[in-house]
Image (cartoon, rainbow, N blue to C red; front, side):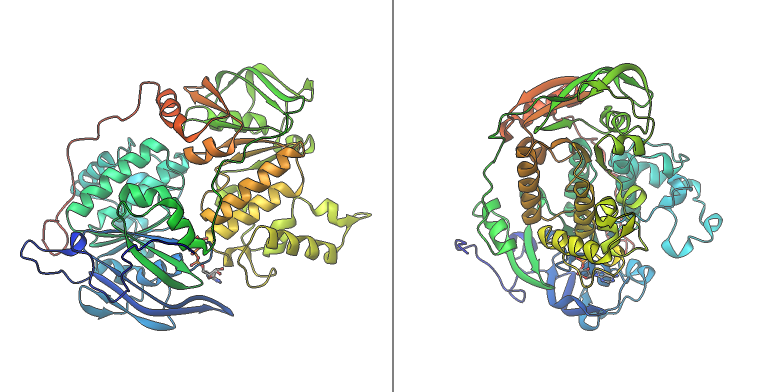
Length: 545
Ligand SMILES: Nc1ncnc2c1ncn2[C@@H]1O[C@H](COP(=O)(O)OP(=O)(O)OP(=O)(O)O)[C@@H](O)[C@H]1O
């Protein structure tokens, strides 16, 4: 591994002055110190002597491959899991948070990867609902002053939501922002965010980052778990990498650090990030969509997709991109227009019909539409391809296991036993299983929403490689992703969508097309002003941060 001299401090070294220096030259102590944490789940060692320190006012990015132990570390600090060994120090004293409430009282707020909102309750009720209070929501109905505060925080995050709106009606991006707003209501001194931007659009992300900047100015320490290397440079003060349950490196983010160094630190291998686009000629037309109108946001979409093509549709939430996916999958009905598949009229009445006609679907919300939580990893993976493992209608368990083992290896899933429930996997590894399941039936066309959300960078590049090699064999892909660099790097063509219509089409896109894409999906140019006001309250101890 070739990494230039990056001034890598050990975990016990004093932190760089820009993160902790006082005007009089004194160095502030860490607000959080995790020392030698270990944690087993059955035979799986999730953490092995992990140590990390967090300084007031820093955004400390935590990177690591899927299953490296990032969420487990966050959950221990948040009082969700008890460690088997190790210490947690908060503001200089040793603490043992045993519940989420205890951690909150110590000033720790966490935004988890898996959202914890109650879908049947309103925005306001969710904001004030402590996890422990879930069974007594009426005791926690917010008072006028609290509603005002909630309104201010939502305003700061640019979430335009009536407080009485039921959460079930929100898009996944809005749910994620609401979860963040909930964490901010606690005025935390330590904020842990586990992949907070996985379902956010560029615009929502911009508002979140401006909010993070203001929290930082007020001294809040932020531990930020992500798989997006760009975010390191956008908001990071320091970055740590985790591997196999250990924190392996901590470096300051400065202009000596590049994405390539981070990739090497993360994976321990040299990675080729050059764009490996279509070298084969696209085949005949597979899908046509003409003048598609739907009740959920499409207002005249025209699109073609050929065999062997990877085509992206990029737009903000509510632009019609979801409506297009739903119409293709037979979830919603076209009110006008025409679609053809392989030259024949295509009008699926249900997802089952779409699947039978050779269209696969990787849905955005794995919790609601994807995983079978109680079922083993093996079964979750082979569900779609079960017919291929059956002879005369009888499922061959040996074939199913062989098939599962091969796929898990190819997808680099970190697991204990394939008979464990899928929920025992880390978030990114669950997503890899769903990806493997979607590919398992070898659909002619795979419609993918946020295909690599939560997947680590090394595995993401491997998955891109798989998509490209399947495309070379004639399989087609429609990618609907909020990850703009991914869309630009992976797709042969990208359509932009705005208010239900396609507004631009870019052949062989590259990263330099980012401005052009952003301008056409926002409809009026990039970079809106942030709200001028800030509404961050003093913290519980009365110190204005
Ligand atoms: N509740 C649990 N039961 C069993 N195993 C678990 C549990 N939680 C985590 N693990 C295992 O511990 C290891 C670390 O998981 P963790 O969720 O901390 O990883 P991560 O770094 O956050 O991964 P990702 O980037 O995919 O979210 C994984 O092997 C995972 O399967």
